[in-house]
Image (cartoon, rainbow, N blue to C red; front, side):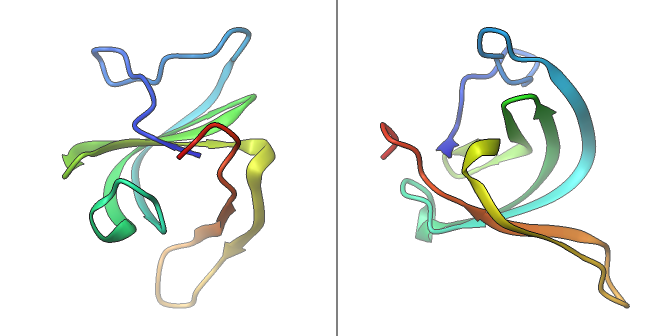
Length: 103
């Protein structure tokens, strides 16, 4: 996982070599906690999520402090769960381990 991966001027994530964009969803609410560099280690924002063959990348509509985007490699996502509450929107929850080289 990485906070603020490189973005193009149109705020789309810069792809890695051989990375292919599979899906884009707008109007996504995103919450992440226990991240170094974020105020209090927790951030909530609305924005766009990009799914590629390598990772999920969330890009906030408006920066929250120094948080603009969040990168989650698919290999490091675990304990994912699709939640269908009765009175609220469906959502996905899970954990992402930091990878070597990240702070």
